[in-house]
Amino acid sequence: MATVLAIETSCDETAVAIVKNRQVLSSIVSSQVAIHRQYGGVVPEVASRQHVEIVNQAIAQSLAEANLQWSAIDGIAATCTPGLVGALLVGLTAAKTLALIHHKPFLGIHHLEGHLYASYLSDPTLKPPFLCLLVSGGHTSLIYVKDCGLYEILGQTRDDAAGEAFDKVARLLGLGYPGGPILDRLAAEGNPKAFPLPEGQVSQPEGGYHPYDSSFSGLKTAVLRLTQKLQQTEQPLPIEDLAASFQATVARALTKRAIACALDYGLTTIAIGGGVAANSGLRQHLQAAASQHNLKVMFPPMKYCTDNAAMIGCAAAEHLERGHTSPLTLGALSRLPVSDVMKLYQTEF
Ligand code: KG4
Ligand code: ZN
Image (cartoon, rainbow, N blue to C red):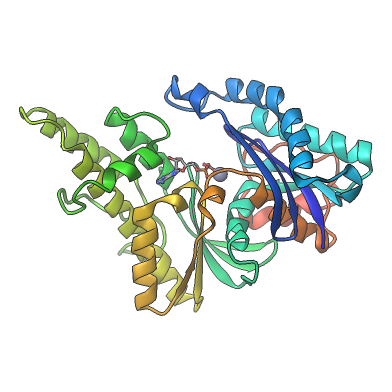
């Protein structure tokens, strides 16, 4: 059973965790949200500097909370792609340095593979094959999970990611950043049927619509137009109804595609991952639709939906068990398809 110390610095969370296979021994997450909020989004340079300030302290804290010495650690991992290159470099450099000093194997981990592994933290017995609906601030993908490191992307967004749509709609409603949790709270007080909104379908060249791809930019524009129209009336903006209608439309769009994909590929389990996996509307909608089709839905624990290092450690522990390690020449990559994950374990990169 491999014990891994994992570092995650791909965006605005400085996170360090120690994971023994699928068991979290410690998980430190230091969020920079309060700093970036004043700019309405993540400022890459500010994020990198914050990671530098915090990462060493978080590493020490993770060891202290797990009550472990370096001798108990079998490998050191860091998210190396996708993400903000300057931010990724901080965690990656820390992990490679520690691996050298302590003579431990080093592993670069794909951030999306981490999100996909978050469901193993709620059910360690989960086994491929299954379908992963990965919905974060930067990605919206349907991934066929065949084995550790073996992934096929079956559907994705053609424009905005689901989390990005939440953030943009919250911003246009003047609600602050990040938008997902704020809209989720407001939606609970509103009527999801108050405003019909377009789900966003992707046309195929041969006619009809793509069954698994999504598009959220039209929905965001529709909310903008509707808001502008409502602002022309004397009435206060029905913010809760707008939030509920928007959230229900996103939940419906994602659920429809995930269920169709699982049924078409004969997959009986859908695991959801990424920040939007915390969304209560999506959780309810997907659970209800899946039960109708006798499909099982796996949700990560709430604290492991948004960025954290426990999910990175969980993926790393399994790779390490399989003998996968990365060369110290591995650098930060702003993007890499999750289907190319095994490239991170080649001797040269
Ligand atoms: O996975 P994550 O922490 O970072 C990325 O890898 O992108 O996801 C962050 C995204 C943000 O867009 C945020 O608004 C969204 O997840 N999010 C939510 C909720 N909590 C976080 N979206 C909808 N409902 C939520 N409860
Ligand atoms: Zn993420």
